[in-house]
Length: 109
Image (cartoon, rainbow, N blue to C red; front, top):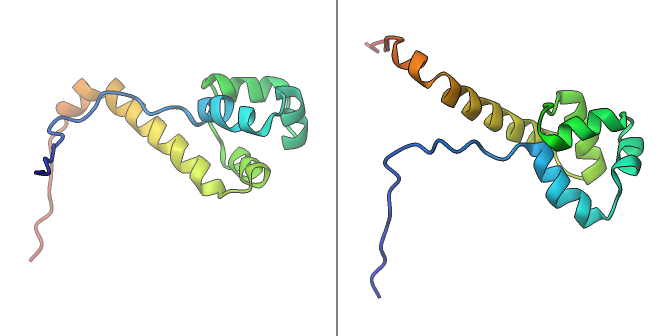
């Protein structure tokens, strides 16, 4: 059977999933923990956790450290997910404006 390769020629306009949504839909259900208990164990208010889980509040470095400890993973992972989300969202929002900015490339001698 012949292997077929597909190439993406146009950048997706889809915004990646906010890390708070991943926490809400994947992590917490797998841990079987309530939002109240999770907030208490993270040392944050329920309101703060609700905003993160809704995707309206970013994962800060302090929250990434808390989540990394809580989930037993790397805090940098949570920050990278937030950065990818923020960058793509900004890219989409600024698309027309960015096209107006001239490109300058330094020449290496």
